[in-house]
Amino acid sequence: MHRPLKQTDHPGYTYVCECKQMVGKRWLSLLLLVFVLVGISTDLLREAPAASSNISKSSSARIPVNPQGGEQRDGSKSREYKGIPLKANLSVCHASFSDADRPVYCCPAWKDADQTLLDFEFPDPSSPVRIRRPAHLVDEEFVAKYERAVGIMKQIPPDHPHNFWRQANMHCLYCTGAYDQMNSSALFKIHRSWLFFPWHRAFIYFHERILGKIMGDDTFALPYWSWDTPEGMWFPDIYRKGALNETERDAIHLREAAVDDFDYVDHDLASDAQIADNLAFMYHQMISGAKKPELFMGCKLQSGVEGWCDGPGTIEAAPHNTLHSWVGNRYNPERENMGAFYSAARDEVFFAHHSNIDRMWTVWKKLHGDKPEFVDQEWLESEFTFYDENVRLRRVKVRDVLNIDKLRYRYEDIDMPWLAARPKPSVHPKIARDILRKRNGEGVLRMPGETDGSQLSEDGSWTLDKTITVRVDRPRINRTRQEKEEEEEILLVYGIDTKRSRFVKFDVFINAVDKTVLSPKSREFAGTFVNLHHVSRTKSHEDGGVGSKMKSHLKLGVSELLEDLEADEDDSIWVTLVPRGGTGVNTTVDGVRIDYMK
Ligand code: C2O
Image (cartoon, rainbow, N blue to C red; front, side):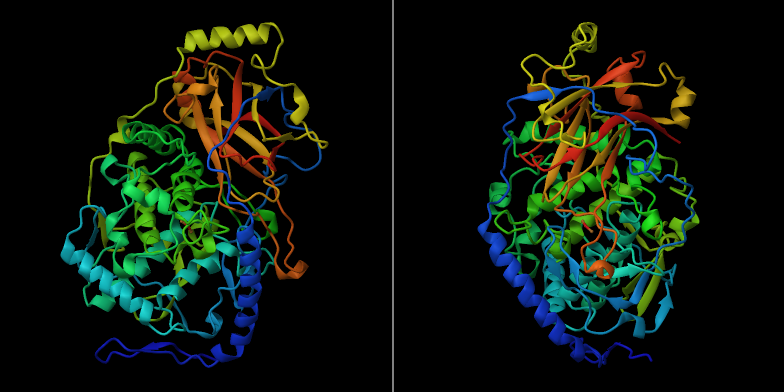
């Protein structure tokens, strides 16, 4: 039975919602709201995560690598698994959990499954191309219009799909796992995998068109927060105005236009130094660490519990995750709004942040010859649903959003100095390798003054409460250019268990001898693991909402890095894991090894 949602077109943009089923569900929402509020008040009493780390010691030893037999500990599937495209089961929307494990409820008051579901249609090819501009460059007239439209969106009745908070809840639905996957009890989630870029592209595409519709302007385009460029590395001022403003932000980070900190360590660097760090970081995340589609886009999530994966692409991990946390209010339990997925889109700056994320996808694709990212049907045919600007529910497949020309928008070009910000080693590679070789020769597997293997927990994994340094063997050395192009050398940190931690971040360095000078600006930086209060669950209501928690893994592309560190001939390298912000206390890692990725 279809109960269509309608937008009536009389003046003043009045919204009408004909969804009768909404009412019945209200008591459930209310009950859950109470539940959530109780959760929040107890959490508020807990201390906010420490802003900076104080690592005085580090230990080092060889972590047990690649155990034989049984299930594979690197998160890879032990047998060939052929997935079918992912799809949400819209007929059951259920309570879900925030990243810090608190119950949230973001379902619409009606069942989307009862709405008429239409296929996606590309905009008319003769319609104007919307040009997304950097947020710091848009003019006052634009901001006034944009601000007014968002204000109207906030006043649309709460049950209507165009209501501002209902749209924010679309994000909550797909990020907390309010829907199961079709024909499976596994949750449908769009973060930390190859669905990340396509889903968010579609989400902001509709948000933009709805805003355009409200203003009666079919050229309206979302601004982008160009945090990859020096001029854009401050919180964009236009989001402090009227309806674009939001109270739940980190006052300290926004004060005096502080520079974004991609690394999210709060080093309190001077602006120039922070900018240099950020540019080198961008180089790493966009170029040297992202040579293969899976490294950039994220792991290949397939349907069912079997097809589970947890490996965000470089940009998703950071600056995406880190800037979410950076903007969110540090005094809220999950750094709401921006710092938690369930609440992130309640802050309009979310859309500017994701415009830039989306722009990074277009840039990366161009750098890689505009080739298709993946040809897997499981990806191309995976689908999501959104309400369009005419309040019709649309089925959007990944293949629909791969070409932004067809979606009739583009990004205004700006300079990207990070393209040339290839980092330099912090210590001359010859000297560093000499020091490291000496350590090898003596069979001493730790830096001077470091502890022994006391971090080894009962199950043989390593606790990241301190810096860990390990020696890792390289199965192949001196590969040819062609071999490297075919297969990227991967540093795999496997079996990462974040336990009950909230925000977890650790950085990975190779052949580092002086960890006091380590930052993303040094070539030794191999990448970062960032977990935004995230608990990996595979099941939902079936097991009473408890779910089985899975370990994740981190894959870092290191071919270019090893060349720059002159380590290409070495049959082993030293890998250092540095927990950031005191976040690793509950985090364990099973091991580190070298792998190869086609
Ligand atoms: Cu879906 Cu930026 O998060």
